[in-house]
View 1 (cartoon, rainbow, N blue to C red):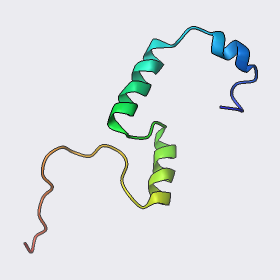
View 2 (cartoon, one colour):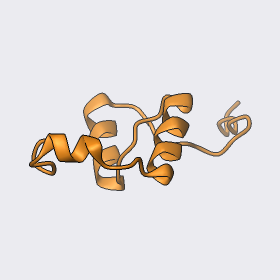
View 3 (cartoon, helix red, strand yellow):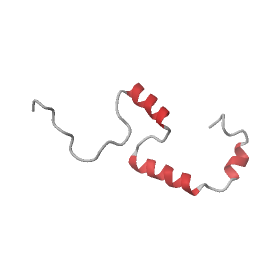
View 4 (tube, rainbow, N blue to C red):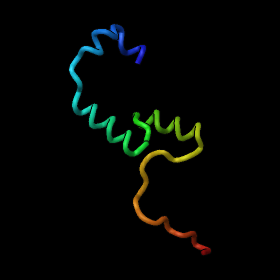
Length: 65
């Protein structure tokens, strides 16, 4: 954000972007990180876990089970 916003006073006075607000609230509710695919891929790699939504429902069992 520091690289994107040069004048914080002006930025904070601008009207809210409703779509951005809905997106932020949705991610607050789910607890999932917000970012593009590259950001999420780097985050998943550094944490060693999946952060993106997966298919709902029970996971298939392995072949030998």
